[in-house]
Amino acid sequence: VTAGDEHEYKGREPSAAAGVVRRSPSILIRRVTDGEEVALPLAGDHVVELRGTAHTLWNAIQGESHVDQVIEQLAEAHGVDGGAIAHDVIVAVDHLVNEGLLERVGS
Amino acid sequence: VTLGESEARVDRFVRRVAKTGLPPDLVDGRPSLAEDLRPVTDDAEWTSIVQRCSANRVVGLLAAAIERDDVAVTDDQRRELLRHHREQLAKCLVIERQLVRTATLFGDAGIEMRSLKGPAVANLDYPDPAMRSFTDVDVLVRSSQLDAAVGLLLDQRLERRFREVRPGFDARFSKGVEFFNGIDPEIDLHRTFVMGPYGMRIDLDDLWNTSEAFRLGGRELFALDRDVRFLHACYHVALGGVVARLAQLRDIPQLLAVPGQPVDLDRCFDLVGSWHGEAVVARAVVLAWDRLGLAPTELSEWARSHRPSSRDVRDLRTYLDPELGYAARCLTALAAIPGLRDKSVFAWGLAFPTREYGAGSHAGRRQRWAKVASDLRRVVVPPKQGDKGT
Image (cartoon, rainbow over all chains, first blue to last red):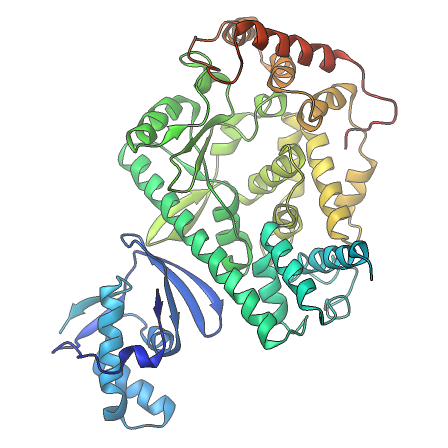
């Protein structure tokens, strides 16, 4: 399963509240290249490839991170307006939460 | 260009890949492998290289070599490599998950465990665990807890690969028990490093006195300490029974080269001396240095000059001669078992196993005894002159 290419997040509806997230401690992970990792949640049944948007997002989440702050951070790093990427980031967060790679820890 | 030349080129390339990231003084004093790893222009040859790297579990080292610009590749070649790399890494994660599940299962039951070989070495001894791939789960448990561990794994719908000779035999004399179910990664439950005389001579308390922790999936696991990991790597390479893969050979210089945390060779020699396993370490070091083409060191010079005793020559044969079977190794193991009482229990168990043991592997007891007799005749034949056993 790939969690990465930006087109995967186009057209998806984000969850209502993004909230605070952190990396799940219960995952196994390996670096493939500087821009790609593979991860397996202990409770999951498939390996997830993290690349593209998802990998950028993954790297941006250190400790407990509020998704709004992550959006601001990524927008600044890429020199774009936060509003332009907010939708994609929130959908990507949802996806990683569903895959068991991220945990929601607050709103 | 003949097929032979191409194969030789592929072999040279892959062996040089296996040295990626080792200290320059071990790699013939050259800081980079770039001059050995010339760009490959033949796509078929590149496919052979990737496949051979995969078979030798050094795809991660090839990926590292490319990242270090030690080898230039085309976009297509890079894609092909990354596909294999991704697949191997995904398999490693599945194996690590099995390891964590086993650790949890044993931990909940109060069974102590040490992670052995690939996962432990990858996570503790390589700068990036992606550089070292592996294919199964190896764990060490105490002899006194082996039967309980076996019971737990059987409850998980795993099957033993071989039946027990007699009840209680495994916990006293075996290397351990292998499990499989055809779906999950196999689990090799160890009591000692190897079966046979060299496994019998290891003081198992030495394996448990110290440990080194690492984290996987949020859980703390324990491995052997680095010195004992080094010795285990040597036992595996020297006595593994098949030609060691490059990844296993690479473990030996890798363990010696971990920055700031060197293997204490004096302690290693004390330990392996008490286990009467110097010939094993010497053989492993010579194999690693020769196959990888490493620069001489004090250790490799010692290994080359080591002369095994006549007992070592005989014992090594039981591991290395493909025509010698289980019985031959058991005969030499018998000599390594201390005490007459244990020797007799061991011999009795092998001579008169339960009816279930060996079912299906021989046509009957008569055939089994014929094979035993054949092995025993072979092991008492003196080795040919010039066979140094290393």
